[in-house]
Length: 134
Image (tube, rainbow, N blue to C red):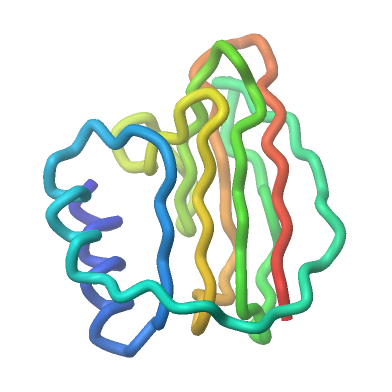
């Protein structure tokens, strides 16, 4: 949580113009931090969506690094299981941002170009759909 909040504050400091978090966040600091963000529309060309299966057996690569990334959508398509995501590996249930079933993370603007990783909350696979924009 602390690492993700620091990343969000750094994103604001370097001028990322748009971050959209959808779904229910359990950490009140996220709600406070996201009120500081000005949302704008950015023209981007979205790439093809890829699907990645994640379980609690270990961290999975969701999307490779792309230094030219201008947008990113990570969606938990599971109807039952949480997925933890982070732009650092390994992701843990305590270090990752929680995506509840059906929720997504959408970033546009000067999006971090590093790889993103996921970890499921169950031994039953959850499908995560990912796409980025250039």
